[in-house]
Length: 202
Ligand SMILES: Nc1nc2c(c(=O)[nH]1)N[C@H]1C(S)=C(S)[C@@H](COP(=O)(O)O)O[C@H]1N2
Ligand SMILES: [Mo]
Picture 1 (tube, helix red, strand yellow):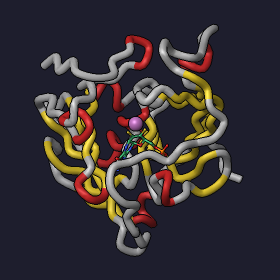
Picture 2 (picture 1 turned 180 degrees about the horizontal axis):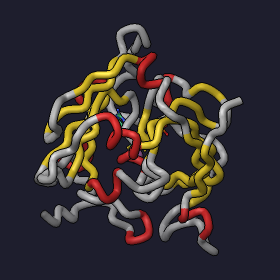
Picture 3 (picture 1 turned 30 degrees about the vertical axis):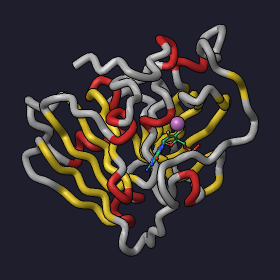
Picture 4 (picture 1 turned 90 degrees about the vertical axis):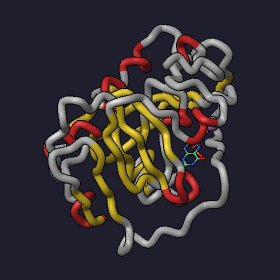
């Protein structure tokens, strides 16, 4: 077995792990807009675009050959359910820095999912140590309904930032709202500050 780096999300070390206004669940709900896309891994690609020296597109085989990490984290959905103690396996967001040259003007990233789904993140959030592109949850391959073959997980923000069926990322200079942010969700989405709706502070 290759050595896999294990990362504990800082929020799981808090004395109180449940943010204000949240309730715990043990059953993982399935939530998304629209229908579950059919993605054949033979056709799946991961495109890195926007403010980079040279755009790059990886195949599924290339993407899954990247170094893996394991992250232990909690989920907080804006609709008030939280699920603790998740173990994710996948590719650290920081690996992107080794794949392309990110231009100095880039300050944000748009994460792009199948069917036109998008969500925006500041690079400070995207490059947190525990942010990863997930291939497995609790030792099992990620199911299609939960975003397989590849989804993002951003432990420190509400779960809508954790885009399912990720197909690429686009580096941006300015902060632009994504799909749920355009529909009224908060531009940032910190569960500890209850950044749920509204606050388009940009
Ligand atoms: N592609 C895509 N990803 C998405 C969404 C979506 O509508 N489309 N919804 C988000 C929201 S609002 C939530 S709460 C989580 C739910 O993930 P789950 O179904 O695995 O619990 O996915 C997020 N990622
Ligand atoms: Mo959500």
